[in-house]
Length: 154
Image (cartoon, rainbow, N blue to C red; front, top):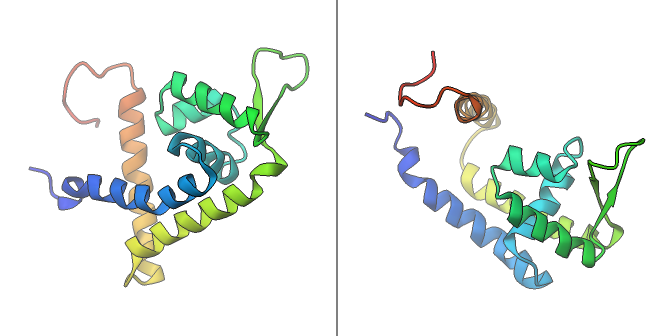
């Protein structure tokens, strides 16, 4: 038995987020994937490669590559290489993406405000800690080599 009813409502959470960021996608005529990539890079500056995006966000490599190409064409993302390494392209946000990112972050804040309405800061802090632990459990399990059985770790 799953102790939390939250998991039954995960599609509602996704729908809320899509509604919040959908306005930004329409305004700038971009896909949700393109906006997600821009926001990921803006919110996680130490993760700046397509591989980082794929591995951390569990997104399709082909969809990420296509979206990056479109963002490059618009001048919203630039690729660069470090040192002699020409295999790994790093990504940085182009100047033209500032307004998109600002609107995207406002949409993310609205999403957070709707979800956390009525919670105290202390409750939000506890929830962040619990959510982080849950994420680490999920991520560890999905990235482990031994996933043949359905038993939980530990």
